[in-house]
Length: 383
Image (cartoon, rainbow, N blue to C red; front, side, top):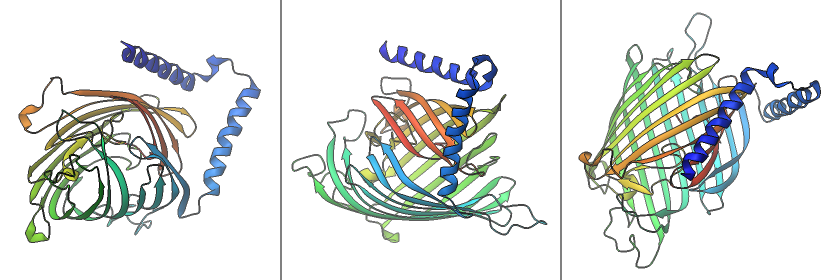
């Protein structure tokens, strides 16, 4: 009953804020208050401009999630376009974010990622490299979770994806992934220390795959209409240098519906399936800042996972927007385990967005409730 009441009050607050944004004349605010609000947003805009150049946006990286707690570091983001001229179709904005982060959970994360649009949007390249020293938690496999068991791992990860447009909005291409983990700290006598769970003694993964995308979004940072659907398949095998042999399929369907007064409704359905000897780090899971906000990332993990999410996005004032979101998801060892049973879990919340660049790069702050309250702070939309 308490959760329903909280959600109702949050929704009522959301509707009041939207009315405030769409009917400012009805509030009776005096000029002094308007001047203060304008000054506040002007200060925010000037701060963003101060931290930016023509090509780079420099952001003191401040993040938060239940998985990391507070993270402090630095982030540089370069937004650019390739091969543009007056006689050709402009490419979508490409991006190159570089990040160093250290969290209060003593996690160190260094990442670099290139998303490159080329040849009038007919070619796409994504390359990522990441090194982390990452204390984390393991709660077992399946729906009957155990008390969170701490462990620590140093891992290196890289991937290379390439896609080529084969029909309007349809992209096809290969992908490669490599990851190596060194679990240097485990609870003596715990679940991982027994050595019976795949991946508990570390892992080395090397795999090839294929992806098919339907991408008809009108904007890659803040889509207002269109769709983004992806099917991907990966195989990790000893012939490729992996010490675990397994396969993974991911189906990710997203749809964007424009609504009056610059509002947007977004829906997502994501299904992850695995087969073979899958290390626990690579099992299908839910939770975290992208899938089922309000649940600890990986608290629920198994061979398969299914997640549904929806968001309602609307403007508030100038570069500030708000969202209301809800989600449902579950994990299972067999595909037949999915259904409207006691293992279907729910979550929801509200969030704020502040646009940093004309292309749509933005700060994100979310308040969520799943099996516990949580909040998240980072960059860009979840979906």
